[in-house]
Length: 387
Image 1 (spheres, rainbow, N blue to C red):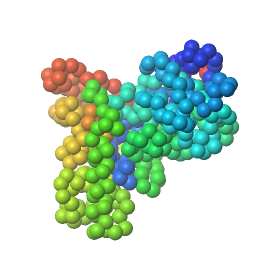
Image 2: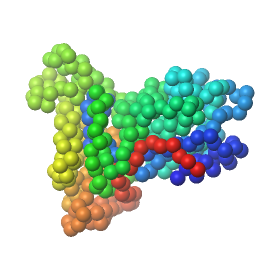
Image 3: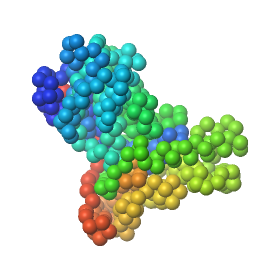
Image 4: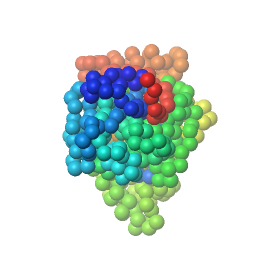
């Protein structure tokens, strides 16, 4: 519902917004660290959303962005063409810059934005993409009568985060936030930009480890550098290689001989995860959830051992889910903290209730607290909101 953002806009700026849009968080079912390596991902949009209510800035305030969020309720005022503010408002300034580059900015280059969200920050559910996609959708509607397509919105949001703010992310998060479909996962090929909606009606548990990550300060940038190094070295073996994910899976032995640790392990993960993700989409289309779940466990082990992007909390969750009989479990959303997803059975051993109890008990013993657990289903992508 858009009311919290609408009400905040009115309270903060004393007027009614002209446009509002929302975008969802996401859960990546499988395909971790493949998107920026040119490989496939398989995310779903979730029901938790971020809403942006927007309006023009006051007369005479050319080039000014005023932004406020329900999380801190402090107005940030910035000359977005000259500087990026600290924190979440930088993403809004990035969106303004990208819309300006497309000649879609507001007449005097100013805007007011109010943000409300129930997407957890730093939990691996892509709160930043939900923010940038919602803002891009709302501000584009305010700036012009010609609406951008969902793919164009995803592009604006991606460039705002990657090029303007400087987060070394891939394109998955913005794409699923803009193009999510109810009861479907999105098989998205990052290199070719091909996509296919895959039926997915199962419920998934999202277990929040309670530890947070920041992609700008974590090991994420180092992993990207290691993957780039792998491509440079593998070009000696395969000169036409552009993306690490394009290395043939049947040539893994050749890859291992060509690379040294830790670059070798990073590359093996990416190539193997690429094959796993495409196979996982096939299994979902065939309704084979048990086999699909087994791939989730494989993916987590690869993330833990080869890519080294897990955490003790995430490993505890996945191990407890497996002991309780869950079909599958893995970290989601880069790792180094954040959340894990768990696929449960409908009844009997491995049912939702049994798995939740098993995870809570194990986590309580290990860390003296219970993790937050929620159930998600595949939801819809960005949309304009009416009020």
